[in-house]
Length: 250
Image: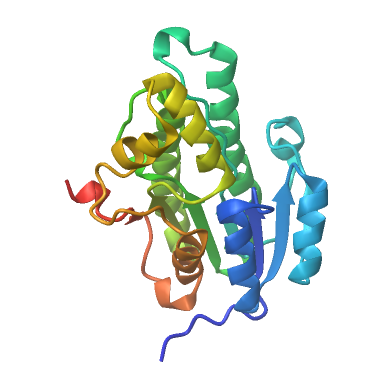
């Protein structure tokens, strides 16, 4: 019998009001955790928090100064918030590159830094970083996103090494293209960059490397996140779990 009951645990999910984050929040709550839904969209965060009997946290993670002095009392931290900009390197705006590094590398670092003291004091912690296939592979026109996800992979592994003696695990989840608003926006952007139709973007760009020819469902990612947060995954740390339909098998 597996032990994935999270009753009595607290969880924080960034970017928790939509897409993968919302699926994670719902799944963790269904398994008994009290979930804080952290998101820039305060209305959506409050709505989901009310739905799952959780807590809403309206936060702009691009404003990192308040995070430097923060202390988080959470047992499970899911670093999920992300954005995307698609452009050739020579046209990539430096401010866009910096913004993506701030949100997807610096903010997770600061949240982990804020959460570890509590986790160490209780002897239990689960940090799950929602990375991407692009934390392991590169794609053209995504210099900032690929760079950030590779950085998140390194941060996760260092956290695993430091946290292990204190009962804290740290892992990455690496989905392929997931059926979320972020990806749906990418379809139109990639169609413009590549000069092809949106249907061709899905078939010839997004799914060309995948053995299973469909997009990943947010609930599938959330299920893996919830397992990593469970007692069953106590010996799993410093790992990167692909959920990509076989993309990285190539």
